[in-house]
Length: 109
Image (cartoon, rainbow, N blue to C red):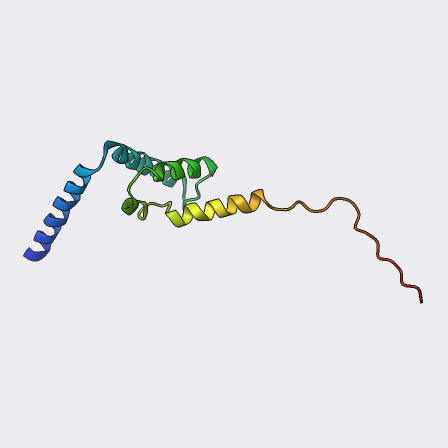
């Protein structure tokens, strides 16, 4: 019991020291990300499904926080890459050919 208490106090102190060493821009970006994630989650009854503006805002703000904190967001780097792949796939999809398909030639028998 005492070891657990010492461990918890130690981790909190190190977390506080790490927080003090970060820049204010990173802290502000993290606060904005957390607020936006909460807004998205409050709108959802089931699993979160952020829309295009939500995705864009979270993608931009995620770049401003340290790498270690990016892993714990609802928008992970893997999610950002999946969104990008989907966007590129939709952008470069070939349109269906227009007009009537060519007729097959009859073979002379």
